[in-house]
Length: 513
Ligand code: AHR
Image (spheres, rainbow, N blue to C red):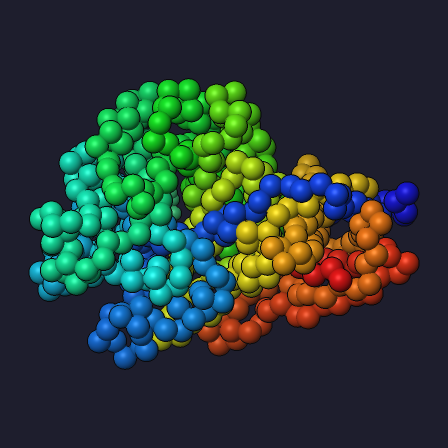
């Protein structure tokens, strides 16, 4: 029975109220949940702002230490996240990207205008070969997003031939001349991006016809065939997933989906990354939790056409999107990252784990210096964001098997007319049989007690890492890069049960022993 204490009655606008109670987590260790595909922890790097140029790529001649042009400090931080895959080159950029611009001697590559992102010059220093060097340095899989919007079936087919052909075709020989003997391993290939918007303002049926036409001509050696991804929709719209799964019966391994968390929900004034009111903390949490319903509804329409769940639902863009930082190019989408972002990331992980039967990949937007980034750089300086720390804490969940759990007695966190459950939890067993729990207390004012019951399995102790801070917008700066970091956490079981105190606004990941 949850222990109910009196309701804290706080009057006045903007003040929060909380019902104090202990939540109960009941794990069902006798049942296996879905595999949490490691690609749920995927990343996205677009030719956008300082995301690739400066954030990742500095060029071999740079005074910043690098490997083949990719900066070493950022590479080594990313390796610690076990980045499973990287999506490239966009985003909206993908539908204006012509792959031939990015091959051959760099001095000969054309300089284009990045019309989507700030109107800046794009000198194509990073192209196909450089991207594959990046993923190979990271030990990650490659997700290449093709150009449907301004390309042609021929251009797309030839890019795939250039990357994967093994024989003596002219394109394979061109790849060799450009320094790559062996074909590249293309793990995932998408036909267009946001075709409902920046990718061409299409309707689902128009896109579906194009998808079938293009994929007819996309051919690769049998042992180097990517998973084919169709561009899907966003937010509450299920029409694209429904239309695509009804009308495309081959060469479609997944439908993509995008959803961004805007504190205000308004594109013209999204809300600030730092120094935001509690009302925007609460609305950010509420809008993040909406992801669950969006996935649920899309799964329901896909289940009708594909009950065996052969087609994946890939959330290949998600994350917080705030007003751009003052003094930055508005087209660069550079934003700070605080404890709030780490909580948002962890809540999304829990949702993705819950839908891991259909959600086999997600890609946070984006890896460095853009939107909800892992890493921020300022020329030679680098810092790790709270979101980075959340990703690192959840590494054990990559390729683990989820353990079903029941969460009851969860108090609501309320601000104004927003009311959301204060606690979120997930559990999984790694390939080595280790049991991990992830917990979030999204209430910024009140610690929460959780009682964990493993149905017969004795819990001796738990140990792991806790991420929390005094301020809702606690963040790292280039002057104080370690202001917010996870701290070691441990607790002992009592008669096989475990009671955990989750501090206000915290993310906790523990191994159960
Ligand atoms: O991640 C930034 C942009 O957001 C992407 O380019 C686009 O796909 C989405 O609208």
